[in-house]
Image (cartoon, rainbow, N blue to C red):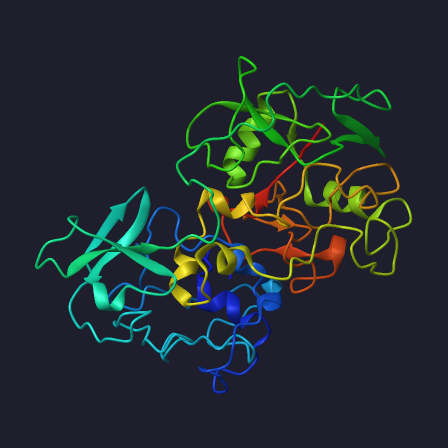
Length: 375
């Protein structure tokens, strides 16, 4: 169903056809977490633990997503009404420690990370306590994720500073190539300030006016809505590609399933990361992590988001790169569609160029949503 906001358990259910068969104790299958890259709630976090209602929305999903809101994948081991892999009940109870907590959770922030005020005895393993930030006794402390790497979620790196677009091909503007009757960005877009200043590709641009650019070696912009992508294209006298244009560019004149042909080739595109980035980042597969998939660190993990053109074989017949994998790409569909899959999956919602996610409206964003422009 278009317009719904995909939350963690719905993503896990991508291949689960039956609402009655769930495996609450089985280990997480990262390969089937592909659309967990879809941000849980545009602006509302549960601060590191489920909210009083479970913290998760198992609303209906669009059939094109291959997701079933009421079912769990047999390999995920996650269920909104059952204990998670850590043993803690998800619905109105603490996630990691397993201690029941019937009252509302008190949220907090420590070192820029979202957390929950709980007893230190329950804050362990993949989470760490910080004293002095919560009401109550000294044993009640702010419990936040223990990040699995050294990424600072408050940093704003600018890896695309100084990049210049190559001359256009086939009479197209810089950074673009001709495909049939239109021009398209050769690479997934990155953003820059209107004065040419660098922008961090790991954060949502909010209401800031930024323009789209396309260059080899750029870290493409994730964390972006269709509305923001449209505006960024317009700032450079371009526009967001239509569905038909995007498909034509990906499938080429021979109308192939993948940019490079009709047979899937392993490792040619950036499309099969072994571990979901949220699982690696937070060091757990507990369901609360999927309420925090807006972290800037998600696209900074090794083996995740690639720079534009790094996968040299992942090119269409006309030389357009990364249409399959790396980042989902918004099209101009007014109801909301992004295509091509991302670096965890290019299978669940269709193969290669045929991959399409339609369960979100144009205001949705998460770490996996990117774009490119047409003209």
